[in-house]
Length: 566
Figure 1 (tube, rainbow, N blue to C red):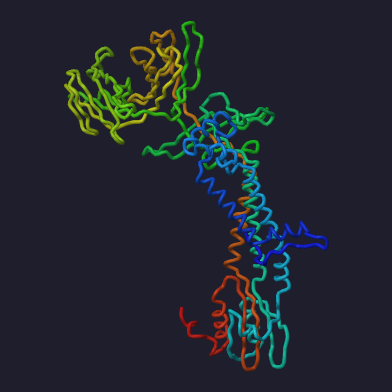
Figure 2: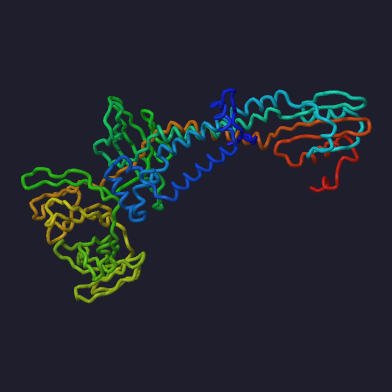
């Protein structure tokens, strides 16, 4: 913000204080401007240092209260007063918005107050100065040269100066020259850019909308707004896609979505950088999920008790990737091994818990499903890796080293590394003995997904795609398919146009200010000597430029010793 630096004195009418003039002068006052900037800086620092309530929790009283209870652990008795002052949501408080509004008004007033003096300076510049100015100006030169005033004027015009003879006094001729006088208006472009930036930010804050939804493929459309109404929109994901190159690197995320409002529907493709525009809103691809499973559960009468998408919510568990080969090197098993249970240690936490599982595989390639070998496997976390122990049919435990084949009886077992698989605990699972079951989602060696469910009975239940299973609980479970989902961000930002225009104006204004500076030049030419004095915005070596000008028109005494340095 640019303000005038004159001292502030209250404006008085004949009958007392003039409130309008007082307010205008206050908004133009440099100390008041610094005060506003300081307040904004303090408010911003508070919003950075003090934890701010997550946006999804705002408007949800239960979630807000739960979040505040967590903050009470750090702030104690100060939590409620801080909440009343809005310190946990600084950027959404009336006092912060009010401060922003006052800054906008102050910038506007300062810009308007500079308009008349700037226009006067451009259109009616000071063209005549006293003789003493040629001896005291910061940028000046004095030299002798042939050709007189005409030579000076001609050389200045060649350098794109507009030259005017202002007066003659005796044998002295006075000239005024200027270049790029219009560049003085560049400061207004910068001021207007700042103003539009502030207005755009305020519009975004007050009238903007931003909400993220997670929507699975081919599921019922999700509503965008919490409150019903004629403007309500619904979004469904027809296809969620993750592009992977030959090297296994993710190269693309995109979704085909359908946006509906009333009787109008728009189908489009959205990506991270190329959003879909519909009904004044933009829908961006924000995330991709492939840890969902469509599960159907029916009771003994065939009544459906659950038929929906099971969301693992990015929860995972670490399991070992094992490979088993026979003596001939034939691969009998190579996939992630699901966890079947946990042996809790003596510690109160999970740090000494041991996961247990059964490794079952055919005794030979092509063997029947009844001819299988079963090894016991256990593992526990060891930093970023797993410590895996396998017990063969002889019961002897063997520790597997990552990447190192280990002989177990007639077979070779290799621990190829840890893998994170989707896993979630369900506390109200129909058919579970105590109501709790754990569901893991894995893939076979051929890439076919399946669900591994523990807690439905004494043995784990394996659900392959589209195969109903009744594990003796009175319920039938069907894993339909693995489901992909997209996280989409629905946005409306009425301030973005203001901000883009502000960026363009700031670029133009700063470019004019620093690369096309205004130059004003006064010249006194006498038969004995020519004197030059000038003003150049943000040019610290204008005096050297003037002396070089003298040398260019034939002077032999214009340059000083420092002017010869590069």
